[in-house]
Length: 112
Image (cartoon, rainbow, N blue to C red):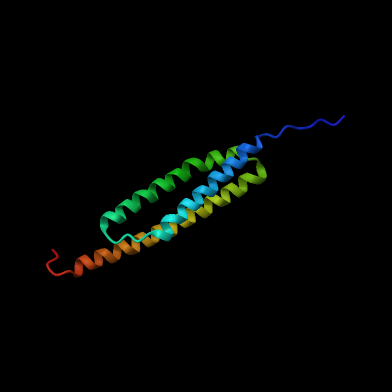
C-alpha cells in the first residue's frame, strides 16, 4: 500500500506568495516607468517610496522563501532579486535627476 504524502504547504499559499511577488514586481516597475519628478519635493516623495518598497521586500523575502516549497522558493527569491534590481535602477535615475536639479540651482542667477 502506497501512502499519499500531503504537501508541506497548501497549493493556495504557494500561489498567493507567487502572486504577491508578481504584484511587487509590477509595483516596482510603475514608478520606474512613470517617474517624472522634476522638483526636490517630488524627488523626496519618490525617495520615500523607494525606501518603503525596499523595506517591504526585505521583510517579505524571508517569509516567502521559508513558506514556499523548494522548487518555488528559488523562483520567489529570483523574482525578489529582479524587483530589487528594478528598484536600484530607479534609485540611480533619482540620483541623476537630483544632481541635475542641484546643478541648475547652482547655475541660477542669485543663488547663494
